Image (tube, rainbow, N blue to C red; front, side, top):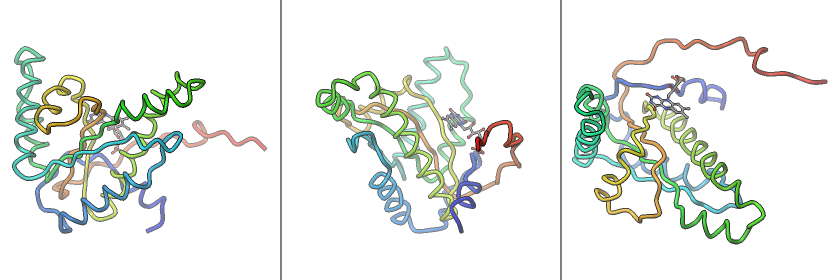
Amino acid sequence: MNFIEMIKNRRSVYELNKNLPVVQDEVFDLIKDCVRYVPDAFNMQSQRVVIVVGQEQDRFWDAVYDEMVKFTGGRFSRERTDAFAAAYGTVLYFYDTAVVEETRRQYPLYAENFHDWVMQSNGMLQFAVWTALRTIGVGANLQHYNPIIDNIVSEMFDLPETWTLVGQMPFGGIEKSPDVKRIEDINIRVKIEK
Ligand SMILES: Cc1cc2nc3c(=O)[nH]c(=O)nc-3n(C[C@H](O)[C@H](O)[C@H](O)COP(=O)(O)O)c2cc1C
């Protein structure tokens, strides 16, 4: 598969199951490689990931449900979190503010840019994992229950206070593929100057 095919195949898959088409270590290794090789400003290596599987997957999504019920005053559907819990696992994306602060101290001239850069690197990491998982037949989608769930995630997995949650990516076997998506005329979005 060439690179563009890989990018094309990555989609938001919401109907996921626990039947991974590969052994779970292959998924873990692939995610580790993405964290290893995705770039970061000043090579500061600020990105962090927690891979949640097994009983922790259910415990995590139960806790998200409880927090969302509190947050919405009871107006939150269990179906949503149950669908994510039905996936094999969830990748939690963070950046480490301790690393960012240290690099900011070293390069004070650029201090104001660091928040953008760290989020851009996190986005690159999310995209790399999402795309790479699909190359081994694993589907995924991207959720944002942060910052509502920040405290419970930190407590649940005993994480350093400096880890800031950015996104949650349920992944697993593909129960149902998504419909074809609308793609706008590319010449509206890309200008070529020559
Ligand atoms: C930065 C970003 C944030 C997103 N946030 C959410 C989200 O919170 N919940 C969700 O269900 N999908 C989310 N998505 C998925 C998009 O809705 C989806 O990627 C888009 O509609 C294109 O569909 P595709 O992923 O199938 O190509 C997000 C995607 C990106 C890139």
